[in-house]
Amino acid sequence: MSNDQKLPIVSVKWQKSLYENIEIDTSNPPAVFKMQLFSLTGVPPERQKIMGFKGGLLKDDADWDAVGIKDGMKVTMMGTADKVPEAPTAAQTFVEDLPEEEQDVTGMSKYGAGLENLGNTCYMNSTVQCLYAVPELRESLASVTASPNEPGAALASAARNLFVRMEKAGQAVPPTQFLVCLRRMFPQFDQTNREGAHMQQDAEECWGALLTALKAQTPEIQKLFGVSTRAVLKCEELEGENVESMTINEVELMLKCNITSDVNHLGEGLALGFRGDREKTSETLGRSANFRGVAQIQALPPYLTVQMVRFFYKADVQQKAKILRKVTFPMLLDLFDFCTDDLKTELKAPRLAFKEAEDAKVGLSQKRQKLDSAANITTTTTIPASTKNSEADGDIEMVDNIAQYAGALTGRYELIGVLTHKGRSADSGHYVSWVKQNDGQWVQFDDDTMILRKEEEVLALSGGGDWHMAYLLLFKAQRCPMDIAETVAAAAVAAEKKEEAPAAAGGS
Image 1: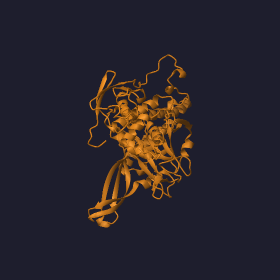
Image 2 (image 1 turned 90 degrees about the vertical axis):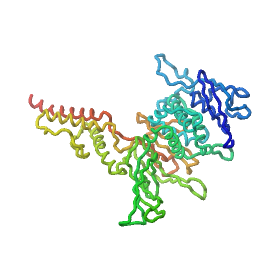
Image 3 (image 1 turned 120 degrees about the vertical axis):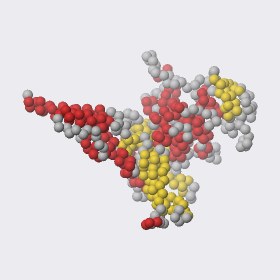
Image 4 (image 1 turned 180 degrees about the vertical axis):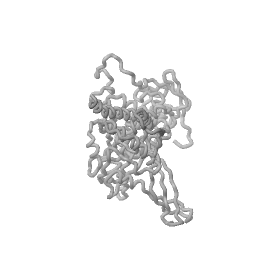
């Protein structure tokens, strides 16, 4: 279709609703039109019966000219929308009485559902499974309004609907509508080989493209994943009094762990990734020059994504070759040393508060003054604790003070997802996701197959051979517990009773 040719606009009647001004791109098959209706009505394409075109019911692969598509025409759709999950009733329901797609024959439905491979789509499936582990992301998509003529909104709507089906289903879900929307928004994922089969794609490109598209639909994406960095760069050609520097502030949805022969651990690769040379215009020299510097984190997100930069373009074979080097990663990542001085100061008190809460749980609660002095915090208690009653007041102030850190970030991140690759090229091989569940259990999602895994099996995904190795890491921010004040107070009371017990025994 030429760029100046007007796309036909139709109206669709479904039940008591009339959806007007739906633009149809006739360069795409009717399956895409059905996906548009799915995003508007919630009726899956396989249940849609669309009448009003020539030849009877509209088929997924029908020719638009043959069915007589016209601008301004009105058609009718029949079909039942997906229902919102309802609270269970008292009546007992047997598995065999449920629809086949809702039967949990493996007992794994509490961990979500697998995704069917629709032809070299493991890169997409593994990406979706990792992002499904972020409940705030799923919640943010609930408010997205579907638009039949906006690919980004259609993709966000399809993601929302897919997440709902994954939560509800007892068996693997075919992500058909989501795949159609993804390829419509990003045609590079629609590439086919000489035989007409869809080609394997890079999971990192899919992850980045998806988050970028969703970010345009809801501001929550940047709030959830955005890492704010500040880099101070200095011109290499100028020194002494003539030194020229510039500050660059950026927000990245993904950090990079660069891999060289000297990198053995995630922290070393991250440090390398924060260094960078950039070519900028020097005002002093009046021309482009190389600026060098190191970026630091100035604001931390609730979730952190790290790419293990394992692939590079190899010109002689014209494909992305893989770096097999073993690079270990932790279950708990500490980013404190990568932060600006201001952020470090901001994190010190919550870090000590978290430690005090953890110590309190095992009866090792420490003096509150240690936290105050480390954070350079002035308490509101100015009267010396010279009596037993004043000491009690001081204890109350201690609890009130620590309560302000409830929910505060500590700068540490817990690993909750790993997207791995097995093979020698990013555009071939196989992608799999490993996701930590709310109960601490790790589950491997290999397309439609779900496998329980142990923590040591996840840590073994560090590379060094032809086995699955980590390509993308998803971390969740460690926070001070919301009940931190109650935890510390309870420990203090328990400690006081323990001290009073011997005294009472001695006076009897």
